Length: 236
Image (cartoon, rainbow, N blue to C red; front, top):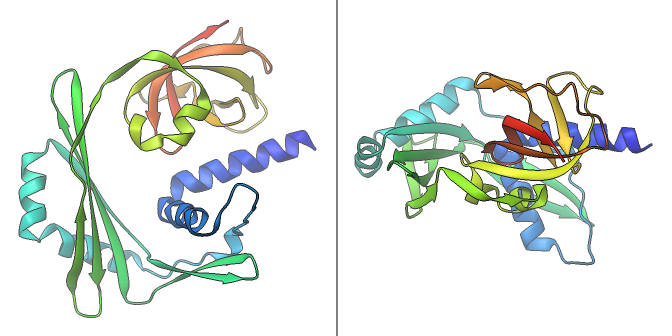
């Protein structure tokens, strides 16, 4: 039973990392309806996606042509732009369903600028009316500068609870290993919260001396909402 729950958790984490828009909507649901003594469940079967690849590309193209956004992109070193559905939230006696709005899309532009020992990050969120081919709303967050390396040793839950704060930062985390060798891929879980990849394009770390249940310290690059790409792993 425990193993089944862990596999379900891993599947959920992978789903969240792929479907960021759905995760964001789920967070909004919890903020709107959740309390300390209430539990809400959103079934992935209740989430449907309706935007085609062409519509997503159109939404991105329209967003990138806005002069204000163009100016910010030109000033940054790198950027990514992704389009997703915008959802209405329906609460049917605690059964939460996310219903996509037809004809509209949300485009998220992530900007990053290298400042040496720090990097700056900024997010632009645009609402696009695909029926009229125009951007109807723009939200721009102030740029936040973060150190490229976090020197303190953190707990996995600190990263999970504050993903935006550590996204892209090299961090050191300590926790207990689980699911090592039990799932497909070069990964394991740390404290059942954080997915750690020990083999990836940036390098590979030997885990032959590590077993499930061991407490380890991992240094690596964090990617929101819950993934760490290990650069070194030390058994405590």
